[in-house]
Length: 307
Length: 249
Image (cartoon, rainbow over all chains, first blue to last red):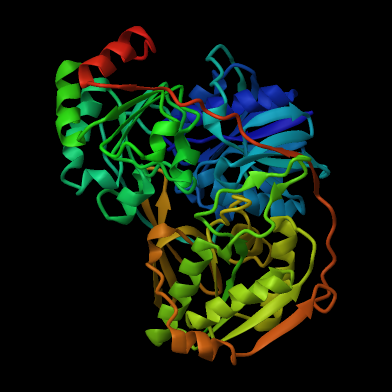
């Protein structure tokens, strides 16, 4: 069996998500190839070649793929898909954007956000914000999957795969205009070992400064609940939850977050959860390993000082 | 300019679903149902385009049992002009939904199709992208801002790490993210008016679509429950526990 993994990268570097998707591909079993589609993405290619378990890296290096737009990226994957039994990508904004197009063009269903590989054709995925887990058996010849990377451990870097250039360049009607990425020295939500998240209880965007101070002390990423995003405190790319990022760090500190179902869906697989909230009835305490009933404006600076 | 908005009936976002005892599915009997929240944002965006004079007609479509007409009426109460109900009692995968929508789009020839980015029951996040692929339309998923001009649509998207802006010719598919807009509440006069707006019912056969089976649900199980931990009385105790008990700092 042959498996094509779509690499998650930003041209300059390969994202840890790719190593986690390769881990899921390895669990399926077979010959694992990684496709790096981008522009001036040599560093990402080198990193992909080193991933344990990868036997070949396909490189589509062209200006048309710089922004990794679904319209032409899906055409490229489709062009290659004939040689593969599986097409797999991380359930990230690029993967979620692109793979359904690939599946539709192959006339197969997609199985989204796989968290467990049961067998070669059977996978587990959460539904209803993780309130239930569906075990799904695919009847399609080609299986198109997105993988929830927080559910898989990254493979190591002991590989030495060959790199092969792919010449096919697909044009798109879509034109890239601009991109504004949040500049941050902190780790990314998806790969951080510690996450400090704030909710509506933070009261304002300015108040997130005390969480940032704590995060910097712990080399943590900063997250937020949907309520905090809805209230306009912080941008949406910080959102943890059913419709935001799904994370599973070693330590998740929920501050001023009540614990709505859709937020829990995004963080309940964290190894250790700490909740700090002044409302003793907040549902977040039901999933927390350590709960502290306190005013966050006293507790957070104190915590920062004690670390 | 015509806007087509596919919408879905789902279990209300505030209701916690439970898995059936025989593990065949979740139990949705007698639960409060609602218009999928992201579909609501999509309807709102289409209605705003009409109010701004950019769109001339907003058509909503839903696929499912007769009950989905309730959500079509809700959509019309929010401002959609007419509705199409494609009747089926089967639970269909997103690819099959996209194939049906392709047939609807061929009939309607909408210039813009606005979806919600995902439904909060299946959490698939596929249908909009699939319709775009089947009809060879460009797409902008996870939209937080939509601007129309003479030469197409300019869409700002929520991507991992920030925002991305794309420009594309019409017809195109846009899927709505949370911050695209804040949907209005339907007023009572508009709810009454919506009852008299046209609602057409079609079958999958009427549309000439043939579907096939792609997957079987082996079982549906509840997730492992997380046990509640302990309450600590002070920040100092918390730090001590994290250091010596959990060993995570």
